[in-house]
Image 1 (cartoon, one colour):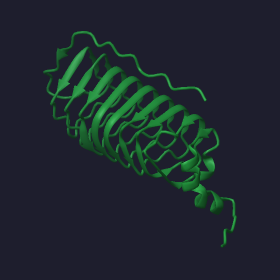
Image 2 (image 1 turned 180 degrees about the vertical axis):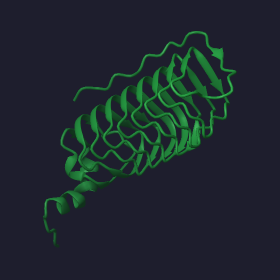
Image 3 (image 1 turned 180 degrees about the horizontal axis):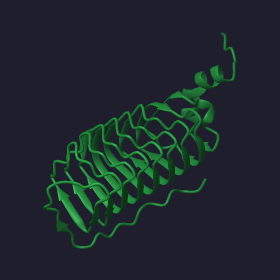
Image 4 (image 1 turned 120 degrees about the horizontal axis):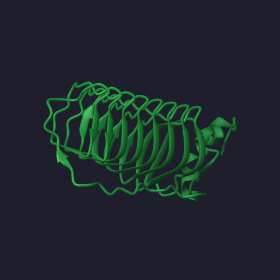
Amino acid sequence: MRAARRPELRLPPLERYEGGGLEPDGDYDGREFAGADLTGQDGAGARFMDCALRGCALDETRLPRARLLDSVLDGVRGVGTDLAGATLRDVELTDARLGGTQLHGAALERVRVRGGKIDFLNLRAAALKDVVFEGCVLVEPDFGGARLERVEFVDCTLKGVDLSGAVLKDVDLRRAASLEIARGVDRLSGAVISPSQLLDLAPSLAAELGIVVEG
């Protein structure tokens, strides 16, 4: 089991962003978005390099195919944020409050998600490499068809996880505070779990294998 590599961020002095809004294919370098209301804005294909988004509203914000590189997202909140096909590399997401975030087809590398709560996270067909979920709550995250390599869940609450069609390699679930798999328990090959988690998952595993358990 190979451990995930954490992002190593050293942000330079940042310039506060005073622009009127996001622009498709915009280029944002060394900017700080502090308390910005980005609701409904369109930043499709935009590039964020050495940026910090702190306390921003991201309701229905469109960021498909965006690139977030060497950046921090702290205390962001929103419903329906669209990051489909986006690239996140060397990113820290801290204390987020998000719902229905679309990250299907996205590529996440050296990403740390710490604290907060994310409901209905869509990571279908995404590629996750060196990603750490730490101390957060994930409600019905969808990893259907995704590829997870060197992914760790530390002190996380995982409710209703969908692993249908997912491919796992060096995925560490042992330290999850709570693990509930709704679909795709047969895709756990390539993951490591604790003995207590095995007991909790036994009924689902037996059902998947067609084993009838009777007293």
